[in-house]
Length: 492
Image (cartoon, rainbow, N blue to C red):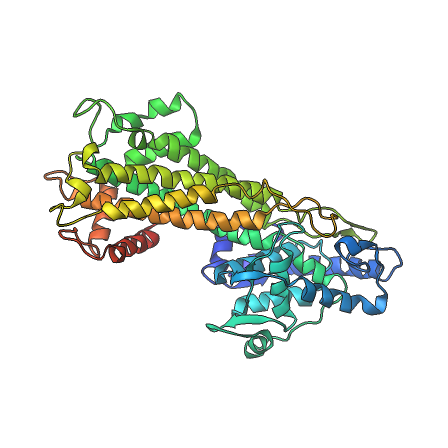
C-alpha cells in the first residue's frame, strides 16, 4: 500500500500505483490538511470579494461574477465544457498515474477541495474505475484541462469508464464498483482540472522506461563488444576520471563490470589499435544520457509532488491566482529526455550496423550462415534504422511552440502534453532498437569459437537462447524480435 503524505511521493511509488495497481491510502495528516483547506475556501466563497474560479467565470470570463446560487452549476459546466479531448484513449497506466498525481496534489492542502471528493477519486483508483480519456487536446497550460476534465466526468457520473476490462458508461461503472458519483461544489471542478498531471503521468512513465532502457543499452552494447572483440582499454577508469563527468565514469565502470571474465573482448593492440566511436565512446554517450536521466529524476520528483492549482488557497484571506499550472518545467525536460533517448537508439543502431555489415567485421554477411539463399539480419537493421529515423523527427521540441488561447488571456502555453507523448513513443522505439542489437549480438557471438562471455552478459545470452535459437536459415523474424524484446523487458 502507498500512503499519501505531504509531498513525499517517489517515482517508484508512482510506478507501483500506476503500473502495478498498488492500493492508495491517505494519511490522517493528509485528511486534516484537506479539511483545513476546505474551511478556508468556504469562508472566502461566502464573502463578496471576487475569487477566480470560485465565484467568477474562467479564462477570459474571469471578470464575470457568478451568484452564490449558481456556484455548483458553474463547476459542473466547467467540466462539461472542458471535456474536449480528441484521439485514442490514454493508456490505463497513464490514467491511473494521472489520478494518483491529482490526488497527491490536492492532498497538499492548498486546493480548497472537499475531503469527500478526494476520497471518491481515491476509491475509483483503488477499485479500478478508469475514466476513458482521449490523449490529445491539452496545451499544457492551464495545465491539462481537457484530459483532467474527462477524468472528472466519471467522478460525477458522466462520460465513459473502463471497468473490469470493459468500456461502459461511467455511471454504470461507478455503480458496479459500489461508488457514488459526487456533485461538485465551489471551486472543486477547477481544483480537479488545473494541473499538469496528465502530461506528468505520461512523461514519468516514459522516464522510468528510459531509465530501464539505459540498463538494456549497456547490456546490449556489452554483448556487441564481445561479438566484435571490442577493446576494453578505452574503458580504463583513469581516462574517464580526467574528464570528470559522473555519468561517463559510471558507465565505463559498469561496462567493465558487465564484461568481467570475458575472453571475447581484447586490449589495445591485441588485434587492432582502436574501435569505432559507437564502441569506443559508449561511456561518453551512454554516460551523457545517464546524466540527463539523473537530472530528470530530480525534476520529475518535484513535479509529482507539486501544487499546480489556480487559485491557490494560502489561507482564508489569501487565495491568490498564479501560474503553477504552466507545464514549462516538464515540457522542456521531456524534450530534453526525448533527445537523450533518441541518442541511445542512434548509437545502438550504429553498433548493429557493425554487426551485420561484413565490410566492417570478420563475420558472415548479415550474420547469415548461408548468405544469398538467406538474408539473415539484413532487414532487421532496416527496421532499426526506420525507428531511429522516426525518433529524429519526434525529437523536434514541442516546448518551443505556443498558440495563444482563451482570447489571448492564456497567451503562452507549454505544449508539455505533446512533449510527453512524443517522449513515450521515442522510448518505445529505442527499446525496440536495443532489443534488435541484442538479438544480432547473440547471433554474431555464435560464430565465435572457444571464447567465453562475461558472467553477466553470459546470463543474458543464456536467457535469450532459452527461447530464441541461433538463426541457421531464414525464419519469420518479427516473431523472434518480439521474443527478444519481451525477454529484455522482463530481465531489466
